[in-house]
Length: 162
Image (cartoon, rainbow, N blue to C red; front, side, top):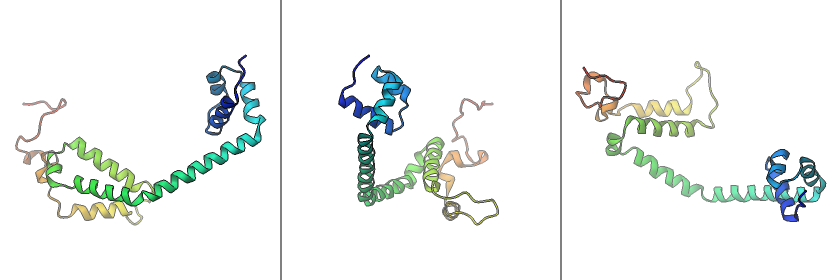
């Protein structure tokens, strides 16, 4: 059986703290699960240090993210403005529009709690209702009714031409 170095033991403990299973660690390091168990549970001080370092790293990452919040919000504003550009909207495919809309809706509603159908509309529904008014979708052939499209639509694989 291979003898583990101190560096390997530290890695095993760190990986264990991060959720790796004893079996996976045993296979990775070529030792028995009993050896992994002894390493993980044998040095409580080292395990505490690893957990403390993990907590410090989390605090550090959150602080960094908080320091970049204004930059990120500025970038999001620019991207949303670009997504609202009439020329870009007219040139976009239905799939591109649906994907962009789905992403925006998913992210916008991620922290909203679902409400029953009889409950007051949530912020997203209010925003969509406000946006819908006065928007002219006629410049986007894929969104016009079939009778109005005048041949602008491209026949897809499921559409048979007559």
